[in-house]
Amino acid sequence: AQSVTQLGSHVSVSEGALVLLRCNYSSSVPPYLFWYVQYPNQGLQLLLKYTSAATLVKGINGFEAEFKKSETSFHLTKPSAHMSDAAEYFCAVSDRSAGNMLTFGGGTRLMVKP
Amino acid sequence: GAGVSQSPSNKVTEKGKDVELRCDPISGHTALYWYRQSLGQGLEFLIYFQGNSAPDKSGLPSDRFSAERTGGSVSTLTIQRTQQEDSAVYLCASSLARAGGIYEQYFGPGTRLTVT
Image: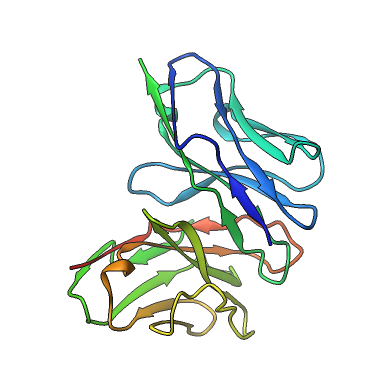
């Protein structure tokens, strides 16, 4: 069984400040890990994915995440927040089995203050 | 090209009625997934189709839920005798390939179902 925990259902940062969204996972096999972003009334858009290659993964819109096996973490960061980053962010793990179904964390709503 | 589309975008129904939600995946995508997003349960997997194989129904919450995929393309999720706890956003996703791959799942905008 696998699970994902996102610490902090709401995170607020000032424009230009560092964004750090936390994700910890539990998986019985080496995982595939993903970060998705959801803007209001829209579906999920993939930000980045970890597939057992480089541990530091760069995604779209200036986001990156680092896979740390020892900490079972896959935290999402962005050096400088922009107003357009305000959205809900979901960390997910794939079961890598027959279906590659995703198990999602509870989500973190990012608010960016001017 | 066109992304995953879902219809209707919003559906309000009375408790006890049946509803059908439709998903049009990206052309050529062989895998199709349904997920549900609700306040109480977050995002959860419902059902998965791959090609002509039998679907993986392990995420369906009750036998009131069923889904089919015709011709390996369009999928319909049916909820019978709807209950208020079925109120949620139902998301469909499609991807290129099956197990072992790391193909991105592309999500549709969802159908917001409200059961009154």
